Amino acid sequence: MTWRAQPVKAATLRDMTTRELQEQLEKDRQELFNLRFQSATQQLENTRRLRQVRRNVARILTILTERGLREVG
Image 1 (cartoon, rainbow, N blue to C red):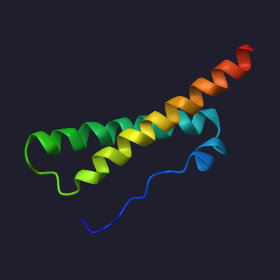
Image 2: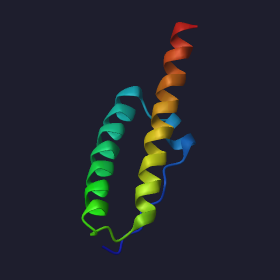
Image 3: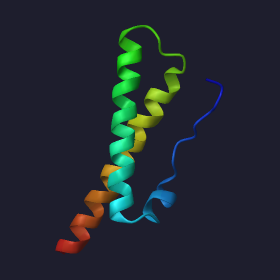
C-alpha cells in the first residue's frame, strides 16, 4: 500500500451529523481491529496508522460525548 491516510481533524468531525459520526466510528473500529491483527502477525507495514486510527476513534467518542452532554444540559 502506498496511500497515506491523514488523521481526521476535529473540526471536520464536528461538521458531521451524529449518524455519520457513528458510521465513521464503526469503520475506524473495524480498521483498528484489522491493524491490531496485522501487528500481532508481524504484517503491519505502517505502524503510524495504528496510532492515527486510535486517536480518530478517541476524537469521535469525545465529540459524541460532548453532544450528549449538550443535549442533557
